[in-house]
Image 1 (cartoon, rainbow, N blue to C red):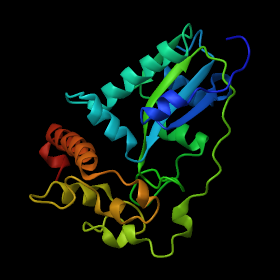
Image 2 (tube, rainbow, N blue to C red):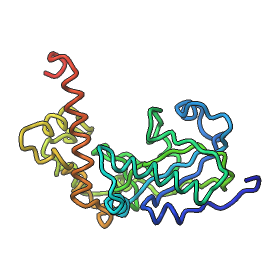
Image 3 (cartoon, rainbow, N blue to C red):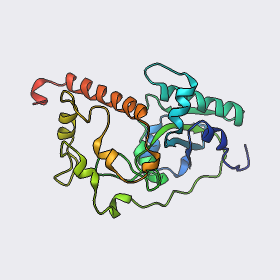
Length: 239
């Protein structure tokens, strides 16, 4: 691919991976590029995400099971996309994987990510109902994308219902309290164990809200990680 070419998004869009952004590797900040491992031979970084419910529908229709069905589906879909739409283009998936990629930093550069009081990235179109699903190094020659210019919707939200909806009062002091949030989630019968009440109270992008099965899947994973983290700490550190 010697000449610049438009980005072939149709395959990804149909598969539920309906958010994409192409970066020139040479234009990324040094500290971000350093998180990507060996980038020799690659020219671009492709960030792929999803917004709304379509991805979960595709994952369910695929029949993929296991512990990480969304990650597995996304990796397989990206592989098929390169094979079918970009034959001859070398690529390496760096996320999902062992590399600690700066997803939020990339999201900010792409204009996808703004901070919300409940510590989930928010976007003026999709609300908080989107996620980063794959980051790929490629020797592609696409036209790089411009950043989306959407302001942080939280700055113009007069009522901020997310703050009052949080039963743990994790944002009551003007900043997010992880101990309050985690403590409430870990209580027996917690109403936040498998979904965030603050996030669901947010009025931005409600038409894209995940269905209950996807919400429960995502939060069951984060709950298990929280339980594992606390179990690994000395008792004196968790009191």
